[in-house]
Image 1 (cartoon, one colour):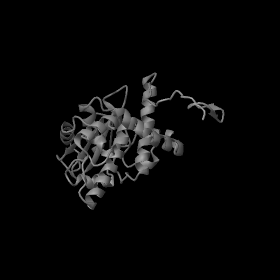
Image 2: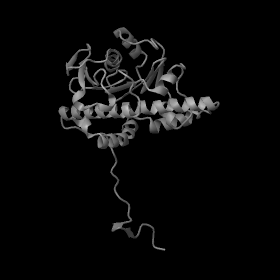
Image 3: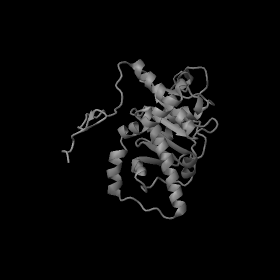
Image 4: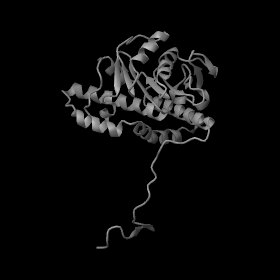
Length: 269
């Protein structure tokens, strides 16, 4: 036998190669960063639509503007997730006024998301939709249990908020109350309402929402079949430290981005 590492395939020597690791982009100017966030926002909304998270006028993803941090980009009211384009996005200030665009903003999007963006400066994006399993799980009034490796992403890292649960949140004080109960962590379960996730990037916020929706589905299925066995706390903490980081959330979104940016090039219009 030849020594390990010798030989070649299709002219490529069988020797260790330098690996190109994916990492979050670095921008040369604010305009470039703004365009990037808007593209990811339009793409994330299309992904939500493809996954069946769209339901009438409900649901929104916001992205903080990098130059004007008290403003955020958001999908306009009553516009299909699956047809969202960069040019459709509107810019809203913390008073709820549309300052770029000519379509209205969902009042609930302004009330909840503005309060979160204002209270948590590290949050650059927030996502909410009336997804089916998230809604069902939110009616139980409980947090996710560490019953799977994926659920460990949220171990001791999400909130259960019962205030105004099930009520349409239209008053600014209701949004501020919600934000006070969500001053840390990557996601929240709003009782009798649904899920909300946040991140330093649109990518992470969108992925956390998708992952949490699937974890809700898994727990509902497991509970319907019997009594799920919990992962030991120390193992859940160990797993969370490796798959629950901001970089992990960003990285997990990249395969979804590759697919939507290839299949839906008009999102860049």
